[in-house]
Length: 635
Image (cartoon, rainbow, N blue to C red):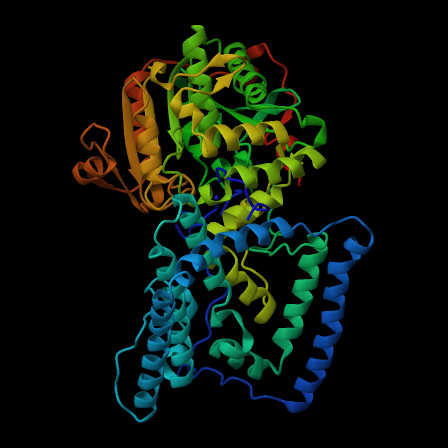
């Protein structure tokens, strides 16, 4: 599991995109609309199988398969790519062996496990016989109501496919129980085993194969196999695009372009160094808040998640509310920046941005806003500034930010000493972690949303994915310098040193309890990357006034939630204290977006206004138009 070992900021998560990194994505449209089980009245009847056409398509399928194999092998034969799955496979086998040892060590337990599984199969068989005889029976196992894999009517109408579905669910539930009931497992090993079993179960679902999916069979018969030919072409294209690795398209990547239909808020790059560009956005109001806002996005993803389209843009909304907004746009690094660490990102990122904001705005003190791992870096910077007597940050907003990683969720399965050593070895060879590794990790967190629906849609139905801006951003991954990523993994996920007061930045020990500035801390209820309890525990390390708010949905959609849409909700004003569950029980639910709540909070601390500022403040010459060059560099 080491190749994908790369916790972020941000899976995208489509439907909840919460959904991230490398997130995934929430609110993502279905990969393709399911075919109706029966034609609607007046609708065209599905085409019947044309044997001659089907035979021709099978021949084409064989030809296209050869091209796919060639696309996979070509970079390996040329020495441009090496398969690096050995470490992942070895780690997975070692993890599963711990569970197997428990059940096989005692013959009684072995028999019990086998009996339980076979009993489930026999119950499914007996019910199927009754259903074939016309009896109404309750299913032995039911899918989750939110599980879209078995929505097609064919899974219910056909006793055979219904039995196949139930046998799969019985097996999945049994495997999950085997992990949960194995006694004496190390908690980390158990967590990894649960995650691994879930990934295997998702992969072998009958919905993922042509001959075991009634919808795919119907599609294949109707098109006389044309869907499979198109799907194999799609597979070849994705292998070529991935340089021999499968890069599954989640959206139409040609439908979007930065500066054309994404990242459109008017602004200028007013400063740049080798790690970042700083963007200042043009005012749209006659007066603005005296205190400017500096946004620190994650370097694991690109900043324009906060400036997707004008309708969804948090950046544009802040500008329209009368704020002077600056955003850091991190570089997409290569091997030349391998030695850049957390302290470099603090010094040449946040600190350099603070210096520039002061020049451009004329204000020494700034409000900062950090998103996900950008917020973690910002929190560490605040502790550094508290220790060194630097008070330029007047207040801070953390968006889905973890400071304490005790309850960091499924990303922790990718982090232990053995896995980090493998990652560091690979990063040493290249100087950075490939963006695709982060993307794979985030996609695995929600594989039934971000992987398998697109495998079915693209390669078996032979359809193109739906254009979706959030999934375009999700696929626009970035690399990470070796030193920076190693510090992050070790001091956050592995040892939790920042929360424990054991981490250092630029030679200064960090104590989060010394951070006393006012803080607005936003978590999202369905977040798989920064779980709300984890965010809450971290916010409680701070000594200043903290407003903790819990938004509906997940890591992306819960944050990018414009007020005009009136989607989701948020909870606030729970009882102050260390217990997240008690806070949640006492919190008040409010309909709609958290954005206006944040603005009220910000205005209560920074009420003064000044005339709108020109970009650069007459002191800095703009370098280029927003969104700048750095964000356009592709991995």
